[in-house]
Length: 304
Image (cartoon, rainbow, N blue to C red; front, top):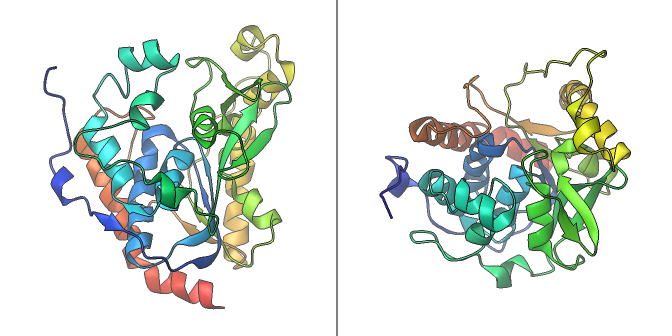
């Protein structure tokens, strides 16, 4: 195999295991494909600071990050993305052939040189909850799969991170699912509506970012590709508008002190499938350093 590109600072990504200390509350993780590298940095900083939330819920890349946070493995998500972004087994033709989608989940959940195996024993301990959010093609609604309650949490994470149009639906208990971001790109309502006194939201977009809305008169590709699933097509068409409303509500809730938001302090231009490893490495460090800079503020929020 030819040598693949890696982030030049890969050896400086922190390593270790999170403590057994549990922080009461729910942390909600936005998706965004490789923009989720920001979240990897955030979660590593939190684990180093002994902030290990009782409940984690993630959408898409947020679910892929969240499973490593729930297993308490500092740096694991960062090492996967910053080492293997250009490996075709992870992103590319081999992944497409083996997984019927753009991401190689069999590779992610298998053995990788330079990356420690997922600590499944710690992941499945009942003390901490982990939910992967996926969108049902049958209903167009978000469903949340908890690691100890669903039939296959790995399939749920795969479904959560399987992009529409370029991925085959993932079957869970005989029902088809795709990217959780098709129906809810930021799973903050899970925390806000749940029985949690403290809710932390991790964003992967700059605070002022909003998505553009398509003209109403167009013939939508969603209606063509997903003609057998009209509810899913409708949710997918409405997802950008839903996202913008979510961003507005998150800002409002944060101002009222109802939630705490960790988000990029710089407006870095990062594509969903960003190929520039140095930019991805800088994004990881931004998430890590943003969190360290606000750790006292976060502790104060949690202590109230």
